Length: 461
Ligand code: ARG
Image 1 (cartoon, rainbow, N blue to C red):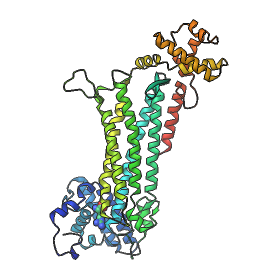
Image 2 (tube, helix red, strand yellow; image 1 turned 120 degrees about the vertical axis):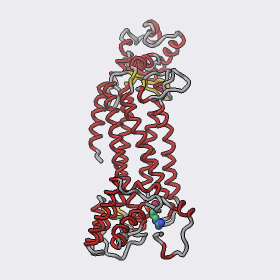
Image 3 (tube, rainbow, N blue to C red; image 1 turned 60 degrees about the horizontal axis):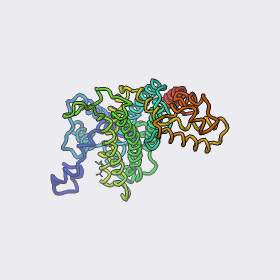
Image 4 (spheres, rainbow, N blue to C red; image 1 turned 45 degrees about the vertical axis):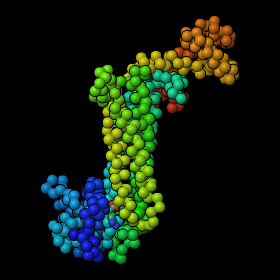
């Protein structure tokens, strides 16, 4: 029998039932539904809205349902309309009239708004832990490779020398920001507790919303009952934060894919985190990185689903909002899945410092340092830039590098050049000299890693 059976004279069509039901995807909120109901029943008893004795029986009944579900002696009825209906139905089957009193001063509209917040709170904490592990992994790899010189790129053209550790720390900083963003979403979400909003217009019962807010770990009850049942900002904010994580993961994945190519060979992924080909025996493919890059699209899609679903909805609750769950669950599941595979892939990857160094040595990435050499001897930077540009052109024509160009050629371009130019443009000098705060020098990379770990510990979930 339907919850709304009193008003209706016909049974629902099976096609309506299938179309309307959300149990197949909202059953994952069963623990939170029970948790919210326990708080509600406790409050109803304390406020004298139902007898204390019945409130106690309801709480025990709900705890019993949770226990039976966890032990496996009870399973969720997949023909129920949604998880709220299932829990209330099961409670009533066990307790009779006491179970029927649970829904006093409550609607599924404020109930679902609460359940989703409680569910996402746990998921955000898990995501925060996963991002923390990724940052720790990156800091460790950065420390191990603080000395390894590699080319830094702009426009995917070799630009200036950096260290591999420096490159990794750029990503560590992105994931630290992601983690902070998740924390901000959590803070905002836990500011306003929706239970007690009723269907949309509150209730005439003397409920104690401060009490339920406190019991459930919220800062306060939401300030407006209509906003309480129809606010999904926290889903959109979370989906946006998840999308930005995927942007970062996807950029990193793209670089890993490039670095694994035979053209680069900067890194080699562990066999346990690579795949082979069914036809080409030589292949070792970075499938994890490619899938992470590919899955970014579905998370952006989830954000778009939520924005489009909410746009133009009149106040207050509309059934459109049932669509929020599949979108936000998919976003959360996808990011968790990606982080689960990505972090160990990074932790186990091997680097090829020889290949990185060879690439750094072959691309005139010390040309800026060569110009700076002349500047330090008194020449204006623009003049130095032009002279070194000419030397690079000369090297390319003569199949030379700045390291191998004879001193006579340097001195023909400017009498300021001397034997010490070779020392000044050596890759080690170029990298070790870049000690500016946040720069690629090995000492700076070690400091960056320590600083990132300290910042990681400042944000706890
Ligand atoms: N399954 C519904 C949802 O996810 C629960 C709320 C139902 N409310 C209603 N008025 N039909 O949104």
